[in-house]
Length: 83
Image (tube, rainbow, N blue to C red; front, top):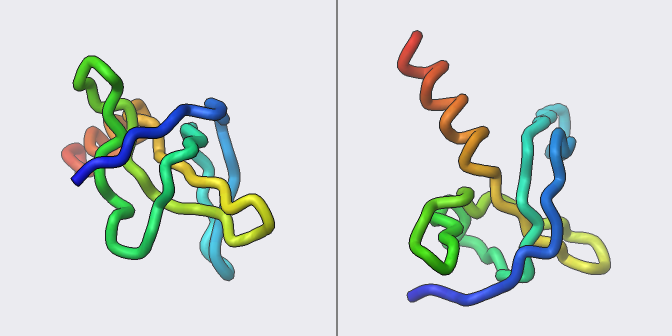
């Protein structure tokens, strides 16, 4: 199953966290709902290219949804491969 949505905004160096864990990364704000169990799935463009990984949502009033941008995923994988 996949859900079609719109990109609302690209947010470079966006900061978020839970408790004492903090993160900073380029993220894509979308109107596609993220629910428990579907985070970690791909955010794909209309032409089938991976543009991000659906990752988290805010729990405040607007319930904003975010995907970590593919460039951040590539950096993470390169660093993991380097050990």
